[in-house]
Length: 103
Image (cartoon, rainbow, N blue to C red):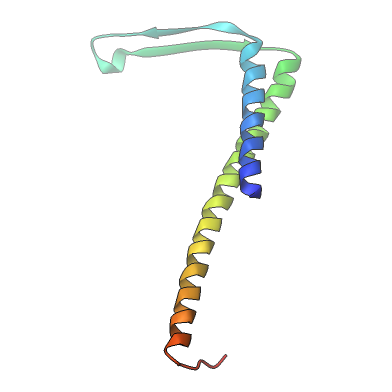
């Protein structure tokens, strides 16, 4: 349950940070096509100054780190639940067969 909330918070932070950086930027973008694939060029010139840069970059980085940590936590939680489920089905099958295990 907490993983879902952390994913939502991380996406809100990412959207806020990128919105600040992109909303107050000055720049241009261009894409050039050519006959050869190696000649295709994407040019980005983006400049964000002032408070949007000061607040936008840390918010974006924190949202990215939180998203990575949340994804890793969710993956480990799923692995743990599968292992616990396999262990419980193994224990229940042994108790139904009448085997006694020493702990």
